[in-house]
Image (tube, rainbow, N blue to C red; front, side):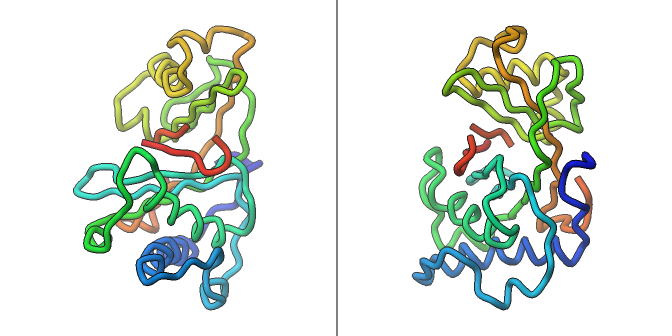
Amino acid sequence: MSPEGPPHLDAAQRRRLLAIARDSVRRRFDGDESADPPPDALDQTFPPASGTFVSLHRDDDLRGCVGTLTGDGPLPQQIWRIARSAAFHDPRFPPLQPDELPDCEIEISVLTPLRRCAPDEVVVGRDGLCISSGHQRGVLLPQVPTQAGWDREQFLAATCRKARLPEDAWRDPAVLLQRFEAEVFSEHEPTAPAGEVGHSGPTRSS
């Protein structure tokens, strides 16, 4: 993790954030529209975060992924809101149904701040990417190129495609290239350190 990013989350903090994400979706099925988690979910101290993503996977397939690139409150509140967006407001998927939740695995990515970089500074397996030009922006989480088996140039080209830019737009000095790192953990391996995405506000990922 970058020294500018949030401190390492311990196992208890990771478990709590994963539980908050699941509880947020479950309570929404029960009609709970609250913007913040219940007080008993906030009895731990969490480091500040520059951004977070929540991904839902069902039968090894993506079922929703939404996040932010900028921190907009304490981590528990961010996760509570983003989990609901991933479950119900990722426009690539229909809203999650109650009978699907037990089969869904939740994954959380806690991001470091965005840092401008040159293309040759990007390290596959360490960095996520944000490439933007004007109002067009594409984001890929660090785990995506590793899972896809991409090299650096393939990673850069894929992020350009996500931004709906030409695949070689990363070579243009006028295009903004930023990298970030992420601490990634899931219900499958909540204590092990570690998408694709589209901008700040919630942002979609695949």
